[in-house]
Image (cartoon, rainbow, N blue to C red; front, side):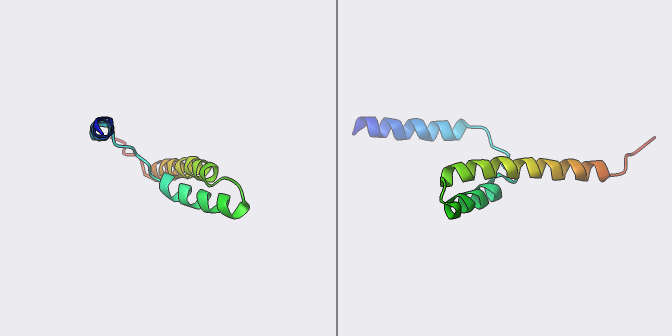
Length: 75
Protein backbone atom coordinates (compact mmCIF):
# COMPACT_ATOMS: atom_id res chain seq x y z
CA UNK A 1 0.00 0.00 0.00
CA UNK A 2 2.89 2.33 0.75
CA UNK A 3 4.37 1.96 -2.75
CA UNK A 4 1.01 2.83 -4.34
CA UNK A 5 0.85 6.05 -2.32
CA UNK A 6 4.50 6.82 -3.08
CA UNK A 7 3.90 6.27 -6.81
CA UNK A 8 0.80 8.48 -6.78
CA UNK A 9 2.71 11.19 -4.91
CA UNK A 10 5.63 11.01 -7.34
CA UNK A 11 3.24 11.26 -10.29
CA UNK A 12 1.50 14.27 -8.77
CA UNK A 13 4.84 16.01 -8.18
CA UNK A 14 5.94 15.24 -11.76
CA UNK A 15 2.76 16.71 -13.21
CA UNK A 16 3.02 19.78 -10.99
CA UNK A 17 6.51 20.65 -12.25
CA UNK A 18 6.05 19.58 -15.87
CA UNK A 19 6.26 22.37 -18.45
CA UNK A 20 3.09 23.37 -20.23
CA UNK A 21 2.86 21.81 -23.67
CA UNK A 22 1.86 23.87 -26.67
CA UNK A 23 -0.29 21.31 -28.46
CA UNK A 24 -2.14 23.49 -30.93
CA UNK A 25 -3.34 21.22 -33.72
CA UNK A 26 -2.18 18.05 -32.00
CA UNK A 27 -5.44 17.27 -30.20
CA UNK A 28 -7.62 17.60 -33.32
CA UNK A 29 -5.14 15.62 -35.39
CA UNK A 30 -4.90 12.88 -32.78
CA UNK A 31 -8.67 12.48 -32.63
CA UNK A 32 -8.98 12.37 -36.40
CA UNK A 33 -5.99 10.03 -36.75
CA UNK A 34 -7.28 7.69 -34.07
CA UNK A 35 -10.68 7.51 -35.76
CA UNK A 36 -9.06 6.91 -39.15
CA UNK A 37 -6.82 4.19 -37.72
CA UNK A 38 -9.84 2.52 -36.14
CA UNK A 39 -11.87 2.63 -39.35
CA UNK A 40 -8.97 1.36 -41.44
CA UNK A 41 -8.48 -1.56 -39.05
CA UNK A 42 -5.02 -0.44 -38.00
CA UNK A 43 -3.77 0.70 -34.63
CA UNK A 44 -5.68 3.60 -33.07
CA UNK A 45 -2.54 4.60 -31.21
CA UNK A 46 -0.45 4.73 -34.35
CA UNK A 47 -3.16 6.75 -36.11
CA UNK A 48 -3.40 9.15 -33.19
CA UNK A 49 0.37 9.67 -33.09
CA UNK A 50 0.53 10.31 -36.83
CA UNK A 51 -2.49 12.62 -36.62
CA UNK A 52 -0.86 14.59 -33.84
CA UNK A 53 2.31 15.09 -35.87
CA UNK A 54 0.38 16.11 -38.99
CA UNK A 55 -1.97 18.39 -37.05
CA UNK A 56 0.93 20.10 -35.30
CA UNK A 57 2.76 20.61 -38.60
CA UNK A 58 -0.38 22.10 -40.19
CA UNK A 59 -0.94 24.44 -37.23
CA UNK A 60 2.66 25.68 -37.47
CA UNK A 61 2.32 26.17 -41.24
CA UNK A 62 -0.90 28.15 -40.78
CA UNK A 63 0.76 30.34 -38.16
CA UNK A 64 3.77 30.88 -40.41
CA UNK A 65 1.56 31.81 -43.37
CA UNK A 66 -0.45 34.26 -41.25
CA UNK A 67 2.77 35.87 -40.04
CA UNK A 68 4.06 36.22 -43.61
CA UNK A 69 0.85 37.96 -44.73
CA UNK A 70 1.10 40.65 -42.04
CA UNK A 71 2.44 43.93 -43.40
CA UNK A 72 5.88 44.67 -42.04
CA UNK A 73 6.36 47.93 -40.23
CA UNK A 74 9.12 50.04 -41.69
CA UNK A 75 10.45 53.15 -40.01
